[in-house]
Length: 458
Image 1: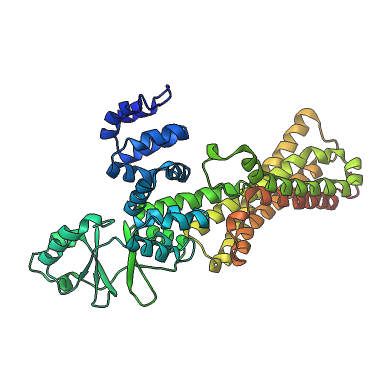
Image 2: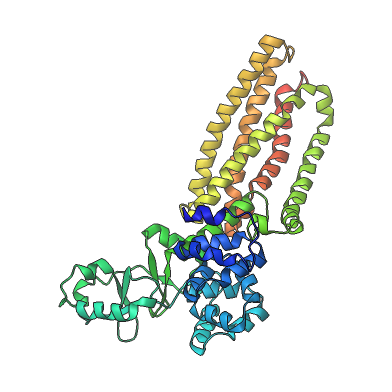
């Protein structure tokens, strides 16, 4: 395979041997070439990019990671920078420009032609992380009084630069969207048929001010390859295609996973982040969680007298707190993901809490029963817990039940509370929930022990 040759490179790439890769690049797709260029050191990446023909170079550039795009732009002459920026798809160019510092963005915008500059400024004028930043104006719009023959001729003449022709958009004389048609509807219709006869005047669209998350949910719900973007008056402004949505969804999911793990969002690939930056991203949450865990020591110190009288209770502390933490982590992960997919909303909070309450009782009872049986077996075999072993077994069982219930309710409620406050639910990371449940679980454990063992061991 061509890809095998491209990625199996051991010797450095120099000006003398760089042209040996032309044969591979002729047959390789722009995506594979971009992956190969991005895998090489910066000096080699520039050499490889410079041997690409203009058309293939522009296609390859659009697939390069941001860091590689910037490194290449900084090293290219002005003429080629202008050609690349002007030929890039508007949505890809917007994605590049919005990631740059303002002064660099303004500098690059000057390389654009008046028409492309006006378009880029308009797209960049929409709110950050809005559909307006994602859309492209490259689409096919037709009128309802056209015949199918006129539409086909129009597509042949003007469709080369369109982002996609899977869908054709029907607008009125004021460019108000009135319907969208699949290309197959036109292909199977007679050439003399009017577009109006094919329309049902029902369509799914995005508003230019919708958030990226709203767009992701709409694409998931309707399984569309592209969706039109309109303003509040219904004016057709552009389209958003599935490739952009997939990229945003991956970015959002990655960010959520990192936050769930107690890490600040990493904007770059793991291997591209300087070590000190990586430490900075991780240290904040670790310090907060460490301070939280100090409360665990404080809780144990508060019950120091009870521990001295019933040292056997310390044997079950890891069991108790890990059960609650694990249950909380499960619940918060499930709810965060359900919120992300649009499976639940804040209006469902009552149902969610009830489900987690029921789940917590059932799961806690299962784990509590296992803990009870474990104490009984160890007492029967090793005579470990003394004459009050049965009460110890009940203490463990009810404590596990209570802590698991606490964990599931906390894990489910925290993302909902954060969403209600307008914050990212993923900030209710599993480590945070686990730390909170550790502290509260210990307090619950010792209070249950006091209640059951009072007058005997305590």
